[in-house]
Length: 640
Image (cartoon, rainbow, N blue to C red; front, side):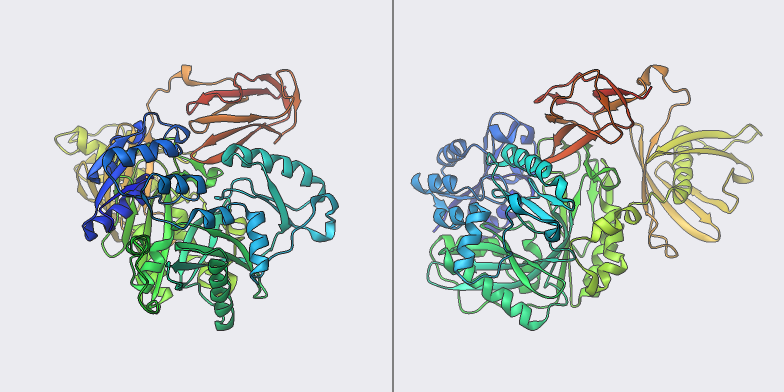
């Protein structure tokens, strides 16, 4: 019987495992980097062990330190979570060699699936359907589009879609470099890219006594950069015959490698209903909560049960209802999905949905780890109800801090293609991103007015009202490249605001403003953090696409001229590390508009920095491996 579990991971997954352990009476051990010393998962653990340093390579990716931490804390089992070393066969073997219980599949099973090329060979022998590989040296235009994919790792790293044959060599080189940097293995392979395909996966659970459970399906087709954004269970609109095919293939995959524990077999389902094996994740998945909700199971508890050598009892419970999960990221989808950093002042959601999060109010969102803030999961008897419930909860969430993908999630869940099951596929964001990330700048004015009025109330013990006539008060805010200059008067006759003839003031306070907007009473909650102002309001019933939360930067009346930068300056959009500079690039070179100059890595993602216009590269003050802060000068292109 397991008595004490060390979770060789951090954040949300550590808290998730701890929660089940507490319910089962098992003590918990956290490990943490210096950056995570004050994190919620560390506070919740019974015991914690420091891993000196901040970078994952020095902390969560050091298997020797993790095993030593388990021994020092008296743990008798290790749960790897997901990410980091969760699918590292050598780490699993080291845990077992140390006399500890590994809460995961046998090292041999992990090794069998570690290389996607080797995994495909095994699956072919087991009768699992596959896409035929393509030899890049003899590829033809008739085979386009093609997908270049890293043999090791996952998360979209080392993956490129090729639509022109002439770009294949360049994309192979780029994918190999990214894969080598991310996984220490530059092997890549090429296969057909299925346009309009769905990403469907099967949750499996196997014990040491020959039982294999196939726990339904999940659809994870809504992805950005080949990384999942919205997942649901069961996968909608799957014919019964196709569902049976997927279950049988997943069962064969598990048995072919002697699998034990929780895992996921992932498939690509083409538009004509054919399924192809993609890969097998030999661990618990980020999206496991939707399967738990539909089947009424605790997958972590079952992982512990299997690790203790106990059998799975009978058949798995049948699915009931529908569950949808959305990944809430600190990122800006409209700016190339750039990760965002800063202080998370407030994260709160209405009751009725499940919130799995590794962060809490006051935490700093840094550059070392994935930008996911939380997973939000809704269950309901039907898909329509679950989707509506999740969209409403996200819309009403209080999110104060870095920019997030919240508006994108809400709009995605309400988009006709998502609600029309026949149109669900992995190209959703390629087609719809521009429409889904529209700023809706016209709707921000009344929110900025509420911010200005609340500011006035906070500065005046008379609530901002003036008894004598005077010039208008002026307050300027910026949001998403749009400036809002709010000019208003507060006097005996109430509010008079330029550009807002249909707005009347009903109630005024430093934290709440109630306005009558064209005959509709609206309440605005206002929160200030330095020069940042967050304004939240109940959703507008007449415009489902309009954001109900806005974040502004209060601009000074007299901008500092010293803050200006040289024309053509390329500044770091986020803190990160320069991982590559274009080969041969040097100061004095002529560059074309859009030409890649360098690549930044931040929060497990690479970001390409390109020339804004044709011109001369007059400055390149960075080098490979250099860490930069947000706003740091990366290059200067003189368009003259």
